[in-house]
Length: 159
Image 1 (cartoon, rainbow, N blue to C red):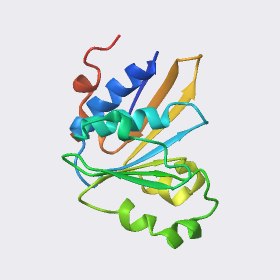
Image 2 (image 1 turned 120 degrees about the vertical axis):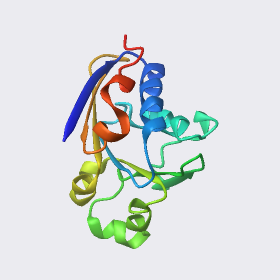
Image 3 (image 1 turned 180 degrees about the vertical axis):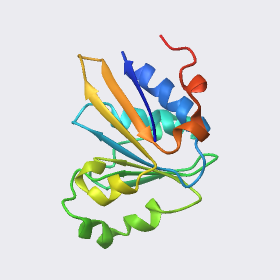
Image 4 (image 1 turned 60 degrees about the vertical axis):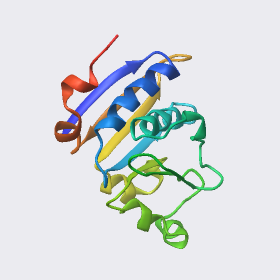
């Protein structure tokens, strides 16, 4: 398992780094996002979406109340928010696992730590923590970093 971490100093920087990651992802990748409210999870998904070919980051909204959004790009992006769910049985009732395991899309789950099976099944885990008003520490670990991303590409234009 590989890991990376970086300090982001703005939403724009977070989007830029996530976009770089998105351009390197392959269909079937499952990403778990963990972090407190306002730590940058949805902002990160905006960048992923752009990297996957979604034309406008403004399309990307937090699915807190609807639980799920789908975005069309070169690779479809399934975006889940589990903030309102408490148990794995809640997932079964709404069919999340069908989308989570789709080999033709990239799936990303905010609040993945609320459902341990989702967190355990992820190919990439990204943890967000606030270190200032606009600063965030972002830590990534998982099995997809070495093949799909490569250390050099992710750190291009590093501040």
